[in-house]
Length: 517
Figure 1: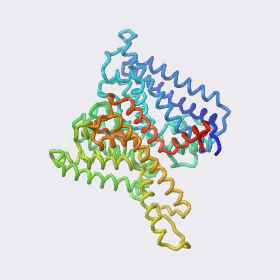
Figure 2 (figure 1 turned 90 degrees about the horizontal axis):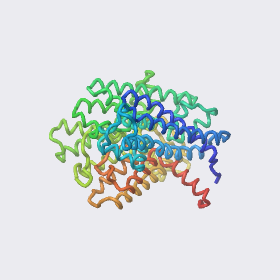
Figure 3 (figure 1 turned 90 degrees about the vertical axis):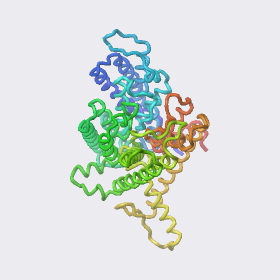
Figure 4 (figure 1 turned 60 degrees about the vertical axis):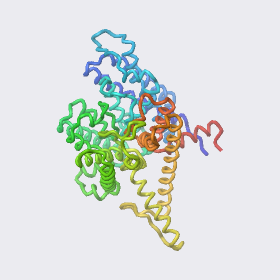
């Protein structure tokens, strides 16, 4: 087995870290506009530390070779872990600044509140950062309303960037020579779609689409009565299917059916692949139903929502039919799009609110996710379709003669036997590894949490972390044991990378330790 070239990994991780440091520079302007001058030194220090680490790595390994697939996989896994840790610096330093209060009155340093004080603990700061960059939305902030706007912005920006991907960001703004190397890195971030032959042009087209969808989402939220600051943050985290909110009650804070209904198309838009958005924007509207994944986004969202509404109605969960329909639709779409906005209490930790049936249906939605090539996580619908159709195809093989020429039809693609076997195997491996990591997470939480927590709620919160959703059943929060927080951080990291890069990274570590046999 060939060794991974760690010089290549070091250089490319450095470039990604450099790109993220530029985001913090942008955040300085937002802090100044909001008059939170006390946060500016924390952002400056964070930018210098992160930028310095990135520049140091790039300079040290400047002559490294372009990445092959194995280096790209290790780069992706390493970079997402490093960014999750380094992205915690603004949380940690701003909380420390408020605690120490070293600046004069004109910097507007507020008194310390219990929510921001959580980020004095490094593990909680890393949890928030990892949740942001992976587009998860689980939070250690008990009352988001109490956070400084600078941290609202940093949370939203990390989700917005993470929704598309930090490697996609790097390819866009730090253009490197060697298109093959850029494409290899791009693929390692669980993306393979190409809008144009050039990967740099593809990435820039993705960003144009993403910015346009974000601006459209913000405009829609303003139109239905959401305040400007809220609309900006929810527009960014909604289209990125991230789910961080500026309020503790999320979208439920507004108590507005109009805002809730308006949020649904934003979540759906984030669930559709970027190449399909590109085709639709260029007049090929038939892709709403002709594209296999997009068609199944609408089918699965509709069928799942109807089943959820039926369960909630049968349980007598809500007072009126309209409320049952609205909350069932919103929560299923939020779960399956992996957005994580909330309008209803699913569980109170040890207190039962939703039934096991409704909770596990939401878990199924979180597991499948939506379209590959969008901003969602989960298994992705194309893998689910491949598993289902591939299994039926394998069973039919038993009843067909060996000489038969067999194809597997996936949408408009007809895969020959070799291609079909390869894609079916890949989907199966990801599914099995996904369940293994999920089972480990559930086992750890059951071990360290109170036995009073219902099993379905523990499964729900671990699934929410690994599918990068952000909904919770009242378990995830600052009072969790540190072991549970660390486990969910691992689940979020693994889920965003779709398992395989993590396995390659672990394999390369074992190989270097001479433990890989």
